[in-house]
Amino acid sequence: MIDLKNLITDFLTAIILVLRNFVGLIFYPYKTMRKISLEKDESQLLLIFFFIFCYFKFAYFLRDKPYPATLIFLIFLINFFLTTGFFYRFGQIFNKKNQFFSLVYTFLYSIFPTLVWFGLTSVLYIFLPPPRTTSIFGISFSIFYLALSLSLFFWKLILVFLALRFSLRLSFYQIIYLLFLYFFWFVPCSVFLYYFKIFRVPFI
Amino acid sequence: MKTVNYSFNKKINEIFLVEPNELGVNFLTNWYKKLVRYFKKTPFLVLIPLSFFIGYLLYLIFGFLVVRLVNLLQYGF
Image (cartoon, rainbow over all chains, first blue to last red):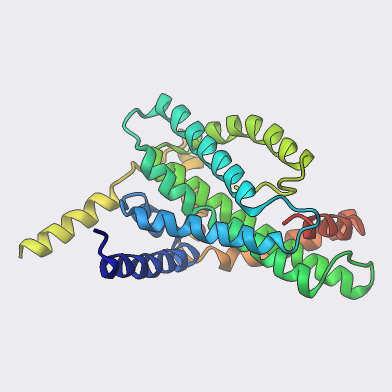
């Protein structure tokens, strides 16, 4: 029989740990990602997947002619596990001791900047819906929005780099080489997702 | 005492999880280490001004194309 009390305690603990790691990734990305790569608690993974699913549910009401949120989530899961599988397999060329679970863990945490960007874009879509104009306010907002997107993108790059560094234990050049290889798979995949209007900006 | 030793060993193992990065040439390794220092702790202190600078630079170079790019991105969720 499932102990409900333990289940609730586990869930609340996972929320606290995820939030703590999230704050850690903002202020101390190196130290936090190193710690995350050694974690073994599955409930945190489930909770992050749940957050992502909630986002897709929320975006469903904003999108024009949307696919069901569950389908989008399934496509995200396939894309996510293909990506981690790609890095795991190619990472084994350089280091055979790496662990798949650790990579899933760190990679899922590196989804945070993506989730923040998509969340912010959705909220801005409600309060300041496009199109932007070429007035002074339109240009100012455009520069602000671009700066916001760029800082989240750089944060994302840092987290992906650290995820590969700590989970696959690779050197700088090996990581750059893997990212270069991934690019050849990522671009056609993103075009495919865009063409079928699943993701205009790839959610990974 | 055993707990202190265990925590200490755990911390040491965590710190030495990966070997330090060597880029082959001393000059490059030194620059890499100097640069990476800013991204290990509170990276947003560097990233936010840098992003605003790049955003403004893009506007100066591409002009109103930046507004069109933002329009595209705002539909991108």
